[in-house]
Length: 112
Picture (cartoon, rainbow, N blue to C red):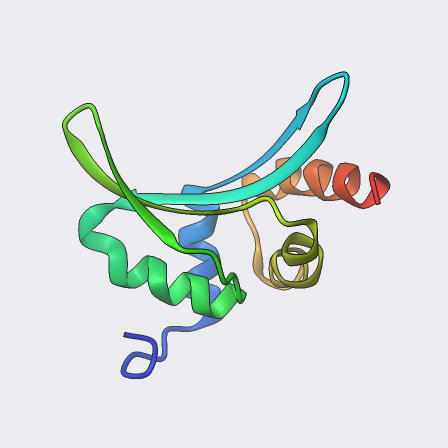
């Protein structure tokens, strides 16, 4: 799909504004940040394209939840989050998810 369909980064950001999750887990010993996108299995090619556009190298995983098949892309690598996810989101993310993203972003950058 990526070489045949030149979907815009704005389109990718729109999909991410609906389906991406920014997470932060903090315990007494560890602090983890992450980014994930979960889509219905029939959207695997779209998720592969999102992975390419945002420059995430992680594998896409398939799983079943409640009888529905999904594909999932996630990363907890601070290097990937800081060097690829944040720059993409800073430019393209809009809408209600922007507020939670900005909080997550600031907490991540403060942890470095």
